[in-house]
Image 1 (spheres, one colour):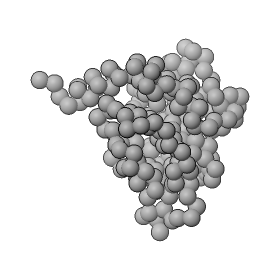
Image 2: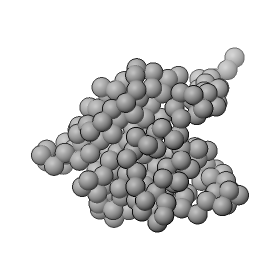
Image 3: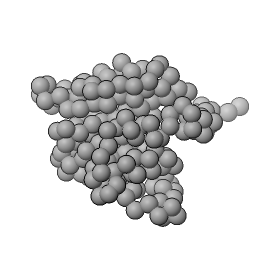
Image 4: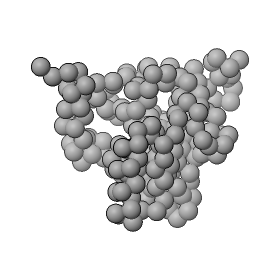
Length: 193
């Protein structure tokens, strides 16, 4: 008998090549992020770095992508890949999503692909995103089925709204979506009133 964790890993690994080539192409996701050269990007949960690489290419020259994870193995694998491929503007690092090591309003974009629902307190993480995001920045969340932690759009919209964000753009359908949020300066952040 297989465990739930083994089944989730199987589904995740099965979907990656199809997702990357057909369903959720990295270059399309990066285009929807409205990237410009010189931007500073934070990606939470970069995995193998396929989306990270697409984003990094679009912020050249001068831009950087900080690929954040709590797992040393993910960071080490990404470091090896960037060194092998000669990518110099991706900075893999271990960091705490609840207390990121970035100064207030210092980041242009934050990206989380199939990551936010896996974090025990997504609202707390989104409030931290609000702290480090520049006033005109975007938080870009993307989800795809068959991810076992797949949340409905309405759930992520609620989390983001409670953290002080407003929806700027949305793409996709029920099975695959991307939501871009900006700061809502007209509301206080829930829990920080």
